[in-house]
Length: 102
Image (cartoon, rainbow, N blue to C red; front, top):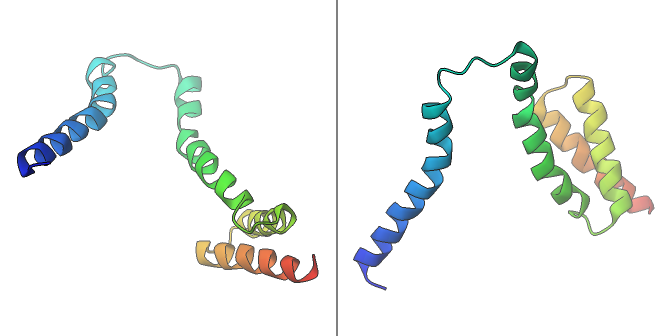
């Protein structure tokens, strides 16, 4: 593959990934959304983040029970509104300690 072909592929991929992000902003700019829909759309980034992280967390340890223990530990620490670093380290420690006993 030549350098020109590689550059062409990268530019085409950039355009293809940019278009779905730009088109709604251009065409839906003047549409007024109801407040209920606007409030629902604010939660989408959190839902997507959870959908991306949760399956990986379940299969990260090789044992479903230790993974669930780690997720539960991290969820409890996050519910207490602790620092993100503490939540991550606490989840890892819960998974590790439960792996020692299971």
